[in-house]
Length: 105
Image (tube, rainbow, N blue to C red; front, side, top):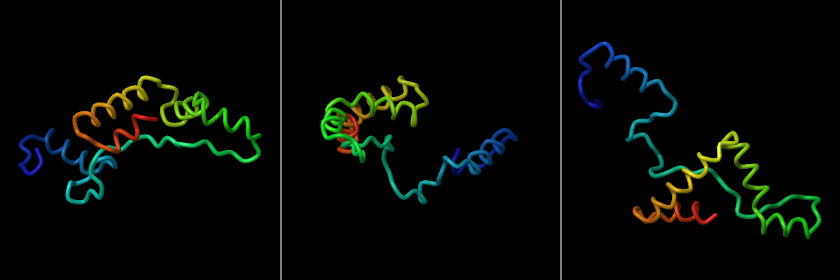
């Protein structure tokens, strides 16, 4: 519909709604192309934690996974799994290094 003249009132309303949403940007104004992934820290760093506990936190990522699920996904495990599956497919088919780095975590 982009570039065409809206024919009905419904088309006009939809185009106006798309213009006003914070999620849609014109292609020519977009700064970055590609996929956006949830940031996942590679290394857990906390001050005041004993060195053995810090080593365990960096080897076993269960606590990190639970905090990401709570903060970014509101405890919806399926959404995180879908993002990781998409990253794997984007890496295989699209040969995206960014997707590989997201998937390998």
